[in-house]
Length: 243
Image (cartoon, rainbow, N blue to C red; front, top):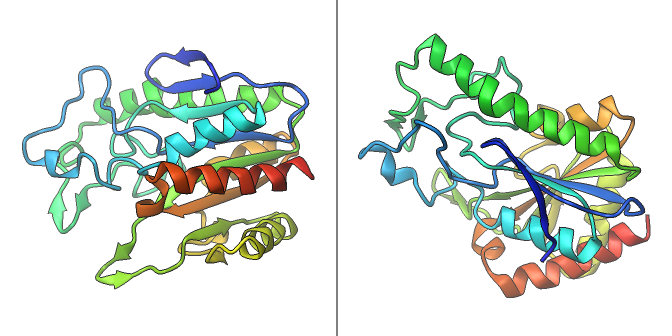
């Protein structure tokens, strides 16, 4: 596996990469960790190991891609329930207050001082680290890795992959076509659309540095399978190496 170059406090893990690679990787929902003084309450423990706390399999896929490509990668070291790095600071879901119809005690009744600390200690340092990593690289593409649930509100999701894009339609459609040609069940801008703000992090840093951004969503029951990730990684590497 690619070596961890450094950790930036409790906010980010950075994997070092070469200067001649075509892509920088990021994973905003890589961890379910609650750092510092934060703890899971007894009632919130139902969320541990679920998509509410972490994108299952996404961190492993990110690290495996970094290793295969020799690419730099930045992964969040805190749960999305502490603060969601893939949302703007003014988003109503930056601190999710309910999940599965029940309150998230971590976030209900949060004081302003707690909100400020989470943003100052975790959210902003993650973004500062990703921004510096993108800025230090010559890679033309920022590639964000996420995963999605096999079922949502009682409806099964049969698709395997989703390719999200906002400004970079040609790149997104090219990746989607590449994956479809390899036999994957993939859809563009599904199960969420990059044009609806669901790739906030990748968009923010790619635009700032004049790069291109695309995001991959992998169905979680597949993303946790090492054999599936190995095949998918090989397919993604082939795409990025021809950019």
